[in-house]
Length: 148
Image (cartoon, rainbow, N blue to C red):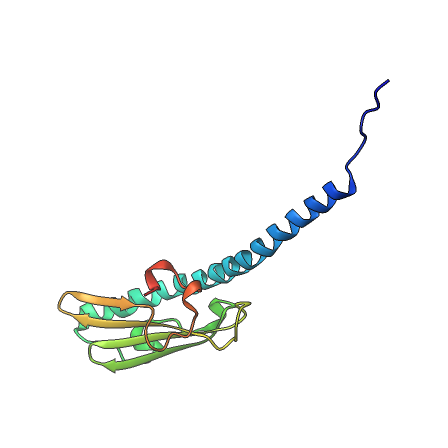
């Protein structure tokens, strides 16, 4: 009578454990990067309202608003997001404006990273750039349209 094998050998189990270890070593950093990008996308969505307000002001008035939340219409309340510790508005010139978000609790790197959206107004409207000189967020976390 032939005897049927009932289980796995030790070497087979060790191979399976090694494969799971390799997969975990690759998947964990990718998952951490994904979670940071998801958190950052919340801030980018938050900035969309600010960009709309500043652009509308420029198109209506012909110049950028003063660097205050009242004149620009930008909500600078940091309670809007758990990932923002400061929202700063900067008037560079009558045609240049910047909205900067100091980030916290992203889970990667120092909590003093800054994401800045720079605006340049012209007769054609306002052009926004989100990867200016003041942005200190590593490029791998930025949305695709912000990477250079």
